Image (cartoon, rainbow, N blue to C red; front, side, top):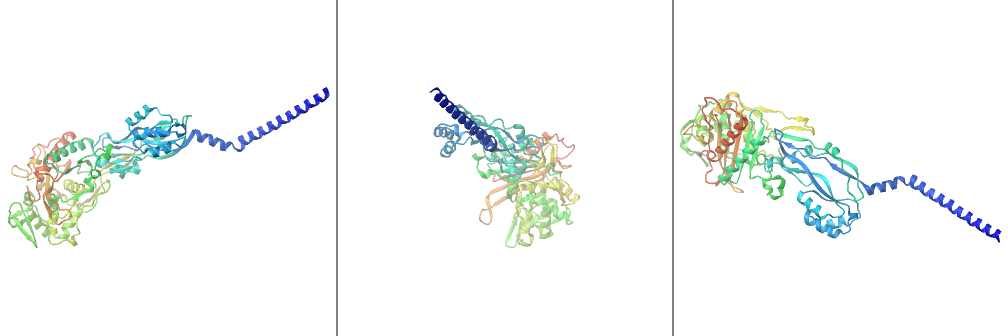
Length: 577
């Protein structure tokens, strides 16, 4: 019996030993399979649970004024993320979040009901929204560092700068035009998460290296602000529809200010009418009225006439075919000097007749009218100057004094700056340079002469015409400045009727454009007021605004007064003063 028992025990022990050996073999084989054959698959699965490949985008570059003041920049913001697999009650969580974030609750609920480890909920939320969500202390909801576009000066130069959309891509203005330069680079990286699904630090240094390039403008923040203030007061005082004011350095073509009113705040652009967004100084064309007369006079002088050449002005009424041209006051014989001084429509028409259609057209196009200036702002208009081959008998006459031709504000100030710049037309400059993250200049823009339009002699003669008129009995008193010689020209243009032939008897555009000082002009300024009420002549509406912007800009730039100079300016208002 003892032998049988021992034998049975021995068999059982052997069986158990065999089982143990087989188990060890199976475990070894399984371990070998896991560690050798399935190692990569399982490692990838583990990494997928606690890491994720995401595409990060560098911070957008800045837009700066000429003195490196920030006009558009990016600030830290918070984005909301989720780990849906950690959320026990997606219905309640979606309800609470959608109310704060104002997003679709059903879509959010679907997202939070998934078994995913990561999901974006909202990008770049406001501080108030972020704080409200933090106070809810929701499981599976997290806060990630991000950046958001910000315009620190609110309305300042908003139409020029533009704004970005929800994905930080430019939608309007320079933000749109130079989006490829400003936007940051993209990089796909793997980031790890903790047990709650939150990302560890996304490596700020790596993100900073992806930052976009910055743009330095020719705009001067201070002069831009002065121009906008003056323009706003002028539009409101005259109950006008809108206004534009530009400030340019004639010698270089640099734009120091492009002001608009009404304005908008690009930080909250959705709260404004889209019609306000555009840079109307570049995109919109208008009939300039008598401001064009100086260019007609310049063409005549270039063709051999002198400032004292005389023309018969028909005593105030002049018929061309079925049309009649009028002057505000009747004149008989006037010199070119006097035609500009008294702003005679008939005299200007007589000059145009003598010049001929082709010559007048060629000089106007030489000054840049009818063509885009390529200033670097989107949606620029070329204005409207009909080819001379299509002119009717009346067209040369009306175009010569600014009717039947449309120009942009940027064209008009460039043309007047040509006279101030000794006859050289400069390419308007809005971008000064493009710089890298460490402010290294990557591309620098320099003043560029497009062409010589008129001779130095002609430029001086036209300058004299624009400066010898402002006296007590003249029309330029409201543009004159103590201590400086002002040279200028006004226009008061009736607006063309919409969808009809002819011109409105109630709606006008008031214009003043000029430069100062007479010798070595420092600044050229254009003021355009659309549909002022009660007063509407350029000399009454636009000229005082011109004077204020010029005086305050000179004070800011420390431009010393001239010595022993008579303060003069030439104004005209399309035959109306």
